[in-house]
Length: 313
Image 1: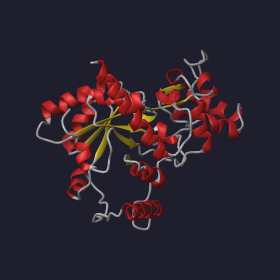
Image 2: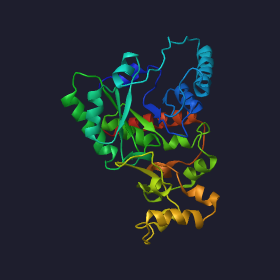
Image 3: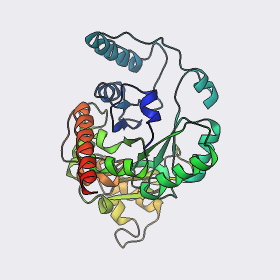
């Protein structure tokens, strides 16, 4: 495998590179900082205030300043985050990550100047393209497209979707990815801003292919207009989902399900069933723990698995 473009851009990152996803409502300064300090790459979710007066940015800057002082290093020159298109971001020295769910989207993102393509397979939790495939097919085809059509550009590919432990990371590297993005696994960490109920539900949920459902019903149920046609999401199912047609054998319209959510359960019970975004790998999550520990454990498990595979050849 050729030298990692990703690690040349982020020299602090240790291989295999673990990246925490920018999950709205979960990924804040504390999570991103702990992932970064453990040798990963941490993201803060979009929708937060990135201005100099932002509490999120102040928290992150304070944490990283303390880390730098402990490591006897100095901060690089800071540049303000510009608003605008990809070329403007790259001109400011910012590496641009673009999440894609198919080859066509990857081609468009590469043509627009993206530095890193996050190849998200359909096992991912939360929102994604409604049509797509798993990373086993997606990553190699995107890599082949880049080699054929963008050979003169340096574009890294990382894998996302259903990856929560070392074996999944090793598999992603075998496919040609330079790193992995994990979302659901980092929700079940001390630093995630998600509700404790959501974290505990992730630990209790097993058999992710059955206990989660990828559909636009999750958004329609709460009449969310945030995501447009062409997108859906994967979340843990509850009784309201089972009542909806296909899953429970009872056919109901979205409107009927929405009304049932109001009348069939208390407000607290209803809140426990909706918006519990999760990837299909949830069954492999057994504990809520610090994000830094997750990075180190997953990275070391991936290294061990890769070494074991090498010995088989």
